[in-house]
Structures are given as structure tokens and as C-alpha cells.
Image (cartoon, rainbow, N blue to C red; front, side):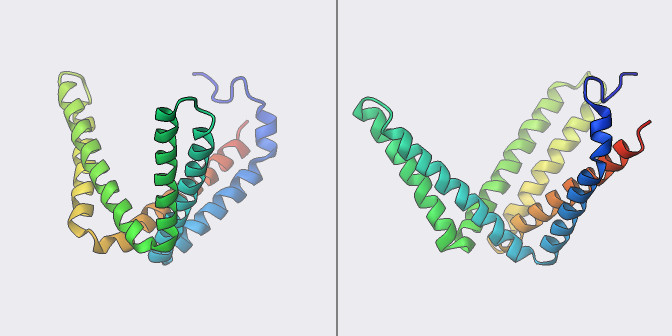
Length: 184
């Protein structure tokens, strides 16, 4: 059995276990707060996406003036402007943006689920192929359920995903910190 910490300074990680635990507790608490107010968590996640889109749009616009040839400049300027407009939309109307993002999320889950199911079916003689198919079916069903509740569920779906991610990440960090603390 190989050592997970092989090639890493184990004692350095062990001495910092409390920082991992602290981060885990912080993430867990943030996840529970988000779970307590899913609509606010949805708006926060829309604002986060909006900031990223604004930043990306500005980068595209700056990049546009580094490219030679008007046909290329026009493409980068249009891309940058679309990103900036989408980012502004996220701040001006976060509810509309959350509806659009929720619809995109449901479509992405359906497509990913169908694709994963197809891949699992193609692996049929391989042991464990049913797990891949089951995973694909569950993912596609999640996408369908989200799509069926759209647009009403767009007020809380993104917040639920954010809360779930924070809770899982927090729990993982706490488990990791306890694992490295107790390592002999």
C-alpha cells in the first residue's frame, strides 16, 4: 500500500491540521447559513457569476486591442461586450439571471446524464457498467425535475447547490484535518 503523503512534508501538514479544521468549520457554517436562506444564497451566487462575467468581459475587451486585423478585433469586442452586458444583467436583475442560469443548469444536467447513460451502456460487458448508467439516469432525472419546476424553482435551486457544495466541502476539510492530525 502506498503512502498518500509520499513526497509531501507530512509533518508540515500535520502541524497545520487546525487550519484545515477551521476552514472546514467556516465552510460548513456558511453552507448552513445558505441552506437557511436559499433565495439570498441564490442572489449571492448570481452576483458572483455576474462579477466573473464582468471581469471576463473586460479581459476580452482589453485583449481585443492586442489582436491584429479588424475581423479578429470585432469578434473579441463583441464577445467582451456580451460578457459585460450579461454581468450587468446579473446585477440589475438577479431574479431573471437566476432563471436563465437555472434553465441552463437543468439542460446541462439532462445532456450530461444522457451522455453518461450512453457511455455506461457502451461499457456493458465491463464489470460495474450499471453504476455509470445509474449515475447518468440520476443526473438526467435531476435535470428533468429542475426543468419541470422552472421558473419558480430558480428562486432557490442555485442557492441549494451553493449550500450543498459548501456543506460537502466543509465536511471534507474537517475529515481531512482529523485524518492528518491522527496520522502516525
